[in-house]
Length: 437
Ligand code: HSE
Image (cartoon, rainbow, N blue to C red; front, side, top):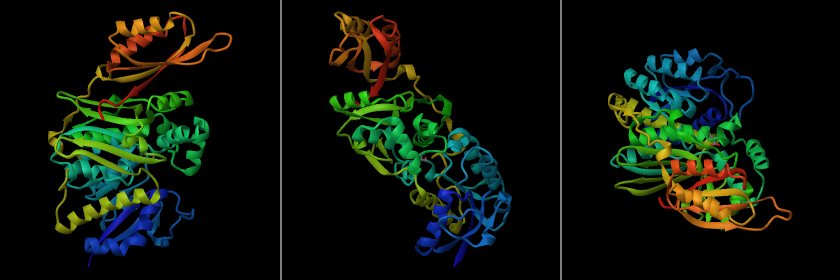
């Protein structure tokens, strides 16, 4: 039986998962592949701390070059994360003719162009199923299963930590800070939790997803992004009253001439499938012009679920190696030479429904002043909630939802409303997606 040698760089949680999967399911994978996968070397700066798996001492090294320069190793699995030296290691592996598998979404979202081109130039594969949605086969779905489709839209819950926080805040009424601490203790959160709660991690995944869905080059910094750190219990309660749940949603919608792409807390109908995606789960609702709706759901992180995605790339690449071919499925769905820059819709131009929570003084004429400014800016009100009068005056929440309005008009109106004497705090704005579902 043929043998394919693997090298692993990064022996952390996911790296240990890959080793465990090879140990637990090596025989099954061997049957399915018709070849033996041998993990020849594992490089990590720390090779002393015990892991959940044990490996032979001579497999471990602190020198990544020992993996990159080993002529036997055909596939390098990069699971160290971060930008450097991960980027240099991947490029070196490719120059040395090795295929690469990585889960490094931050690197691919920001340096993907360089890496994908380098792979094509070197005639090697780059597998990155684990970089988006953990175990969920979304990369394969977009590149292979839906290859004959124009992707009309993608709505995704792409960050488990934020979803966990929003779920606990909604279902248990717990405050944001307490739930964040729980998520950190459970190990979902990134080393820097701002990446999770400010939407950076989910936006990295959106950038990668967009480039595959549309076969385009995406500049990460061009994507509009907002996190969940400003979401209050009060807005969650009003959302419930209006029949919505708030989710940190990644949105991509194809228009005739451009693509609308954004990531922000979003109110979605409480009975939509995405609203039922709780805890730290991820999900994608993809609509193709031929396929219609496709829904993918699963663990977006974690040792074994992510290792499962890594191994799926390893096996795909190994199958090509056994046939003596490479690059059967281009990294970004198209040959690199014909990939163009994505044309994103300017954020000001997007149109959706909105939720506003004004902190207004409770006195006659307030609603007419606010609605006058909204009307002047082409914003039509769909519903209004105003409750309770504060003892001794002070601000009360006035909630309005709108019909479809343009982002530019909304910003213009809120800029004016927030200057009014009767408005005592910055207005809260949460976008609503229900017309698209
Ligand atoms: N920290 C990420 C999340 C998992 O919470 O979804 C890795 O992408």
